[in-house]
Length: 84
Image: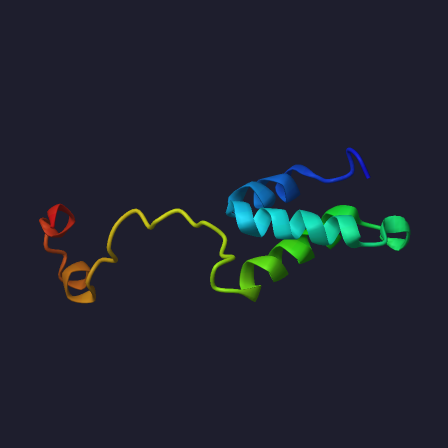
């Protein structure tokens, strides 16, 4: 198994909080990997499941860059809407 997880898998693991990450790794450790053809895809499935299973096990997401632009401002072309 060593060296068979791709970078996106490791990045997804790093995006989980500590509790969710430990739960995902524990699930991977319990799995019978002898029949798994694609360990990265298998582990990504575990990560997705763990991240959505409980409200406390959520993937940390970066906050949005800012509030969405109100439709009335973007459609009028008002030049000062970005400074709000």
